[in-house]
Length: 356
Image 1 (tube, rainbow, N blue to C red):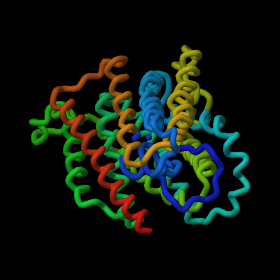
Image 2: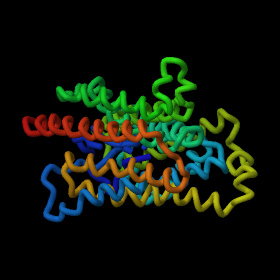
Image 3: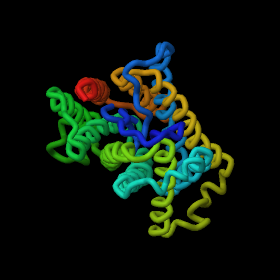
Image 4: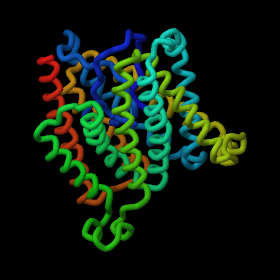
């Protein structure tokens, strides 16, 4: 759940650059609708990148709340409550912009519905499942493949130009993502299971796919809707999707929404949910967007990598999830490759903007 806005602006014909993250185009999450980054930051821009890094690092703390919540709730129920709490926080932002709704085109609504479904609902479910069944450190590092997916998606859907070196760095990121996902890479040819490519890694890759495609849809939303309305309505749609999903699975009732495990530890459940929706949700959004106002696009991408570093530190320090030596090397290669994808694409997009 990334990329909510702070102001109710007029519909913008520019798209944001980032991602559930987490990077090219936009980062995590999912239909992210972010404030356009300025190419010429104002005088106070010297601390802007550090605000970007702080906001992204706070996003990386979500594993600290989501992993223990997996012991109390079903993964889909966690995402449902997360949407409920964030929507409550966003109501003061949403209500003043409701008058814009009749002016929104059908195509924009289509992008928004897909963004809310793929990024806010389904993608977050797979992320929660990945943390439940996989190595949390591997999961958070594998998600760095998301920007490559969003860049390819933008090329196919919107005709964005790809830098000549994009394919080299993207291929490097994909290969590194495979090696960071397996415990014994020499055994891949024998058996995926014996190589250590568990179901958690698979969920992480699926999550990256949904969040990456959601980012592409989020760019479509940016064309015809204000940032403030788009970010709020994305949560509304995500909550509607989660409600239907819980209904389809027969979990939209008291016993499933607040199971015996949560009843046994009610204070723990409430505190963890509140931290998930605030410390790893609303608060970093405010800090991050203020940073984006003061930061060049090409600079912001590097500071966004603080999200992965924070997530790795938490899973190492709190949950003692370790990596083998080859996985550490592959993780560093993955982070570097994604950062280079972001850099070379930013150069292309900046040249396009200057020639427009």
